Structures are given as structure tokens and as C-alpha cells.
Image 1 (cartoon, rainbow over the protein chains, first blue to last red):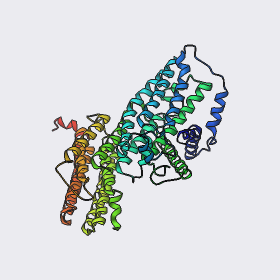
Image 2 (image 1 turned 60 degrees about the vertical axis):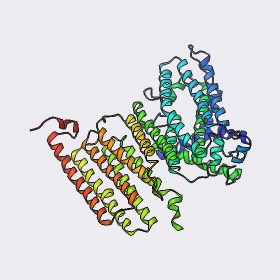
Image 3 (image 1 turned 30 degrees about the vertical axis):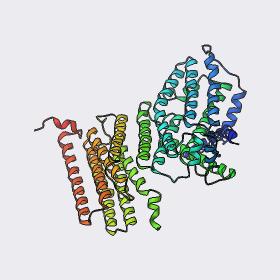
Image 4 (image 1 turned 135 degrees about the vertical axis):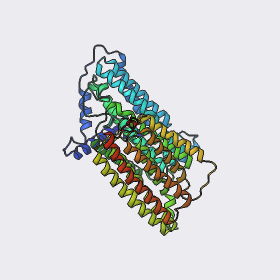
Length: 313
Length: 220
């Protein structure tokens, strides 16, 4: 069972996207697309023919598969609702089916690298622009994300995500709240949502993620979009595992699978709602203002790890 | 013990970390109104901390101190400053001397220095054991804010935040001085804020601008 949790992420991630869009629409007073619209979009895209730019090399063809595979690999390493349990962790010498957090983050980074290459390979100006911006954002996001993760890792004494999740029967501590805030900003930046990037427009001056996908169509576009949805849900799950793992099965409290799945659903809904709320209430900030936002995230995560190391909570 | 939740949920740590965050946030805020709001939240958290401590320690005089703090720093001073800011028609800080990301990094370095230098030597037991570290960080960061900002209003807010930090430091060491001293300190701060408000208006009237760099030019 450990090894099949990722199927949930694979299948439900478009639904999460649909839920976020629906909440956003409701907040803005629109009726919005149906909840399952992302599935319809993907199904339609998979049936469409592709248009390949004449200048494209093999990288253009490889990028969608690499991106999709890297996100899928990363999601096989994450405990969704079953952490494997601490005792199993010590018995098996650390292998649980759940992976190391650092491996997860850098597997995602591999996908991002290929996505940026794919954007460049198409040979249009917008692709290059999107790629360069994506890499700039990545550089700024990575330290705050890693520091926030390290706070949870130090608190539980392991960088194995299964062990972190299983360990987490703690009360909320100041350090975890700070780290969660930093991680949330990092997730917003990673998933290309509003204060950082606007997922709904193709305005050439502002687009980051859309810029890289601009030349993709048909199956490739479907793969990339799906990978994007999965990455979003994967990061949500990671946030839940790291910072509020209460209710995950296999931990000390001994929750059943059904209860754990219910907790996971609630956590995902809360995160979707938070994301939609941030997107509706904030304006997109200028690209050159990004360093201050992400700098703030970095300071939050740095403060969280300092607080934890110095005060122990 | 029915009051154990104060310690179990580390309430004091949450409140003091919140105060630290508002001070750090001051370094990235550009709008005057937001800076004032940061100061207000900081003062409200300070008052909450005192009320919680009064509850935990069963100390009646701390309730009075909390109420006075709430009234003066949480309501009157922000009100006065907001009035000054609206009268002077200044909405934004000009670009500070050190840019935002760098000053944010410097603040976290300051926190590291304070935490690591106070981790040995000073021992405070009980539920406020981490408060002193946070309060000294607050003092240093507000001092840093006063150095980097150019407008007089933000410097005044920095000064007031520093005073909050000092108050917190004194509180963490003594669990509140006698009421008459607290009242005296609060009255001092109130007077200070009023005088600084008048002073700001005078600077604005004489120099047309509140940018303190311009004070170096002579005026007859």
C-alpha cells in the first residue's frame, strides 16, 4: 500500500486544480467552470494533433516526458496518508517506501530544468523569457524552501519524509508556524500562482510558466499541464506531511486508513482554499519586486530554524 | 494545574515571535499606514503577553499594566501618529538606505547574533525563558530600522518599537515593575509621541519634506 499512494496524487491533482479555480470564481462572484473541467481539458488535449516548431530538437520532444516522469517519481516518494510508521522506519534501517525530502525537492528541480530547456528549445522569444524568469524564481525559492524543510527535519531528527510525518504528533510550535508560512510562500512561487505569476493569462510581459509552455500543443501540452497539477498537489501533500501531519496513518496515534484519507482530504481542501484566497485577494507583484517577497520567505524560514535550534520549540 | 495550557501550548513563545515578526516586517513595508499597523499589532501583542502573564502568575498589577499598555500603545499613539501621517500627506517611504532584501538578511543575522550570544551565561527559568532573547533582537532590529529609513515618521515608529522591546526585556526579567513605575514609563512614551508628532509637523513646515537627509542643508 505504501507504494501505491501516489496514484491518488496522479488521479486527483486535476480535481484539486478544478477546486481552486471554482473557489476563486465563487470569490470573484462568477459561476466558474465545472469542477471536472481540468479532466475534460486534459482528455481533449490528449486527442489533439501536435504542432512542432521547425527549429525544435530532441530536447523539445524529451522535455514533457522528463517533466512528467520526474514529478511522478517525486510523488512515489511522498507519504500521502500512510507514513509507514516510526517502528518500521527503525526496523528497516530507514527505508519505508517514503523517500528523503532532499531527493524529492531535487527530483522536482530536474523536471524544472528540462521544462526551462524545452521552453528555450522552441526558439521563440517568449519561451526564453519564461525560462529565464523561471530559473530566477527557482534560485530565490530554493533556499527558503530547503530551510523551512530543515526545520521540520531537525525537529523530527530525520530527513526521511515518512519519519518526519510519523514523528509529528507534536503540538504546533512557533518554529513550525514560521516554517509553514515560509513554505507556503515558496509553494505559491513554485506553482506559479498570483503574487508571483498569473496562471490565467498569456500576457507577454508577465507570464512565467505559460511562457515556457507556449509552443507546446496536443499530447505534450497535456503532459506538461498534468505534471503541473501533480506538482501542485505534491507540494500541498508535502506541506501537510511536514507541518501538520496529525492524523496520518501509521503514526503513533494509530489512525486507520479511512480516517487518514479523510484527514488528508480535509488538509488538501484547506490548502486549496488558502491558495484561492491568496489568489483572489492579492495583486500580482512586479517581477523585480519578487526578491523582497521571496526574501521575506527566506527570513521567515531562517527565523524558524534559528528559533527551533535555540529554544527547542 | 488548570493554567498549564499557557506553558503546554507555548503561548508566550507564539506571542513574542509574533512581536519579532512585526518588527522584521517593518523592514520590508513601504507604506506608512502598514508601518503603523505593524506597530499597532506589536503593541497589542505586548498587551496580550502581559495579560496572559497576569493570568498565569495571578498578579493583579499586571492586569493594570496590560490595560494601560493597550490603551496607550495600542490605541492612543497609533491614533495620534495616523493623524500626523494624514495631515502631512505622506504615504510612502522613499527607497531606504539599504535595499529591502539585504536589510531582511541583516535582520536575520542580528537575530542569530543575539540568540547565540545570549544562549550562554544568562539563565532565566520559567515560562518567559526565551522572551529576553526576542526582546533584545527587537531592540536591535528597530535600531537598524531607524538607521536605514530616511523619513522621520518611520524613524519615530522605529523608536517606539524599540521602546516596546525595552519594555518586553524589563518585563521578562522582573515580571513587571510596580504599577507607578509602569505608569510613569507609559506616560513618558505618550508625551514623547506627542512631542515627536509636533516636531514632525515643524520639520515638514520648514523643509517641505520629511526626508531627514535634507536636514543637513542650512536654513535661516
